[in-house]
Length: 213
Image (tube, rainbow, N blue to C red; front, top):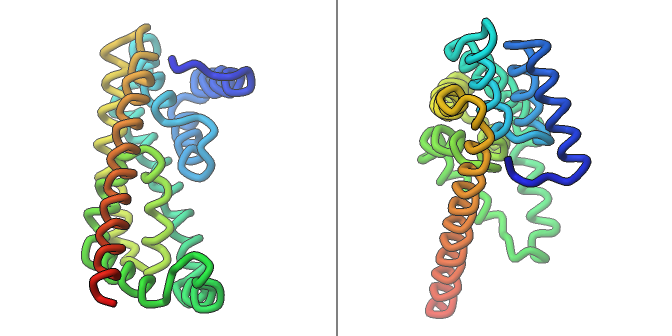
């Protein structure tokens, strides 16, 4: 398992004990919390859930279903936060203060248009990307993406992610912490790709502004 500080280690120990005591309900609850405020990442929760299937009455399908239900509830909560905040408030903030961040109302409108075109794919794929799997629910709520579609793509994406990690934990047995280690490498690669992509996009925009002046 990845090295953790004292508080982090205590949190993991508590989470694992909680899962052992409450089974499916424990997994669903922790995954829900992980989506809202990730104290314990799913990269720890789900492999251990898989390991539990090798030494108790819980099953892989049951653990996957519980984790997916928790994922959906957490995503819906963040979607509602975005919907409550709303695009009108975002536009008002950008209109008033966007100059400090070099953001204009038209940028928000362009981003909204992009999400309307690619939102379903973004929601689906980001459920399998560390950090982004929680954050993606907020812009979906901001633009009021269809709730049925949002729930559907969230469920499918979460189902794939949860199945992979629970199954890996079950396959590895007592070596389940290796999954968390591998996911750490995966997260580093994903973050690197995001940073490089953001740099390329910003560079392209800077060049476009330079030659359009």
